[in-house]
Image (cartoon, rainbow, N blue to C red; front, side, top):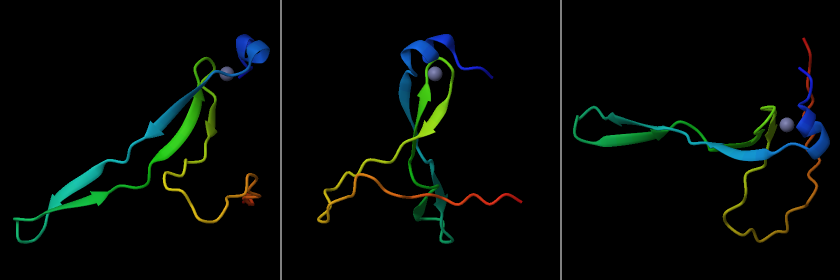
Amino acid sequence: MPMNLFCRLLGHTWVPLADNPKTTWNVDKSGLLLVGTPAGTVKLWEECARCKQRREVAPRRVYPTAAPVPEEEAAESEAQAG
Ligand SMILES: [Zn+2]
């Protein structure tokens, strides 16, 4: 699929999107207590409004960390084909 012309000229228009994990609520064995089980962590990504191209974004840190966070994280995942 060719890139959108406007995306080519102006660049992508990234729209931040988030996937809220749905917490499933179940009653425990006693039938009185409600137990919530989070489905997962919040996933963040950005999607181009025009060509629907997606890119992952790193989740922002809500709490300030004591140690300085390196700007460039050399997190190269080794994709193994096969
Ligand atoms: Zn685009």
